[in-house]
Length: 398
Image 1: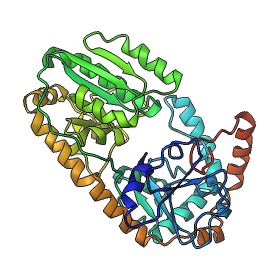
Image 2: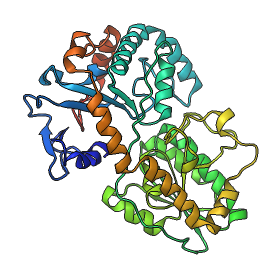
Image 3: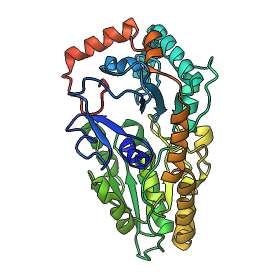
């Protein structure tokens, strides 16, 4: 959605191409004026161009030979794990699995070294940008020997909404928007528990959960929800992007979310709490913060008890504050979005970073960045034996 959205704002001054499968998200709905490139049929990508993509291990870019050597490159870090340098994940609710992963990751020496060389090259060539401080910090922690240039390019959402007063209804209509996946489930369960307790002071609360995920994660969530009886909970699996704005403006008083979903609320003057993520059960009292309290454009941080917990819950006070000062809080959330994530802000920075990006496909090819380390190759071949390849977007390996 991000690349599709930003492509429309570049049209007045640039020729813009979106690469996707014909039945992919961008392929089925390419913005007017933007040129579509069918990944499965393209023989050669346009020359005198720049390739902009989410950061990844470059050996996962398919058909890289179809790009001219002088094609410039800009990597945009959009997830803290984009440059995760190890073969095995240590991010698991199971401590045993995490410990096993840490032991096996001693085998990742050559993979980490290659990614370290890649990040160094991209940074020195001004071809690596980060959506927020959290992404920059996580990448820097993976490669502590590098002095990575801190270039922040926030993501963006589109149209702004209208300012409203509190609907004045007896029930405070809260909402979660986001996929129901491992690193989000724990904070969502904690949110439900805290809202259930808050009813005693705040008054009636309803929570609409918009999002879907793996059946196992959804089952865990529904089992946890069953124990809470003070709040009314409603599940909506999916809302189409072009209908999300109307839903927020008509049916939501307060939004809890992370990432782009949080911006959808703030841009529409809705009091918005930015949530943080955790792969583990949240055992303390998490401090809920408004989106305008976030720093470095962070749209989610990994929860650290020392930084993200509080002694006593302040959530109730904030919800009461929202009911009495709805327009003020909503306006602060909107102003934070406008100053950091509106199209006017992001597109201007985007163009500047594109103009200055110096890395090229040819240079990356010469340094061997498109060739995986031996262990990565072995594991990829093994995985392909157990799953059918069915790519659904872009020109990247699954």
